[in-house]
Image (cartoon, rainbow, N blue to C red):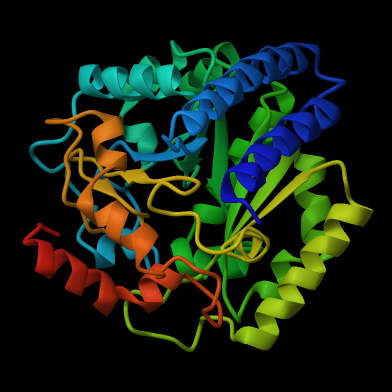
Length: 363
């Protein structure tokens, strides 16, 4: 399957589903209609670039901070030293992110996922993002920083959509994210429901919680809270502990289950990563469908593959997409759909590191 066609159809489907599920919320529906028009315009830009021999992905993941207030078990960012308790030196400024967002918009990138660390600790960057109304910014947050001030902020700026991390019920969530976290995010969801602030949920799927988070009960709970999208992210064992990672039969069960949810509970949008890549012809990182910019400006294939040979502080996004690392990954077969499951770049990290070493690039 052509990766550009797959991702373009994916964007269109998300927008159309969001229009449908937000139809009763007039403010949110207007935002989504406006974004649908902007997304169509962005898609035309990408098609024009494709005709000229330049591939532009529709998605960008931007880690806007390295600071986080939680110590979640198995956190890939902490394991890769990409985040910590304090803000690191040399992070991109709000002005630099503004330039990146502007360039992305001009190129036809219509979704920018804001991550961290904990992105709500960079209010300056979030305010910058809010000004780019033709881009939809899902904000991946642990939910513990959503106070009344942030509720009002999200209410005013509907192109920023909070996506709250939750692992299942209270016991499962607190066991991974810390005691009392579930209570805080439950309170945040209730407040967003009261203000009609549309939000999504991000779930790290492990062997221990997969039956819970794919259950009708859990999905119904989130739906009743006001959640409009669930993003299932398969656990990547960056700490070397593989017992929690689903195996191939379990991944097949998850694929079957998400198809059932899409059919039976179509009032929400469901995205599975990397499960949905199985229908796309392989991994969509390294610019095929998305790429990652870390908090210091390094252009990386994916958050799970934190290697870079290009920094957008010194170059453009276009130059980053043409970097030797991205070119090698796209031409040497590492992104093809021939791996057993899970994150293919993480599974092949020794080969990625070999490419970096051969090029003399920094990781």
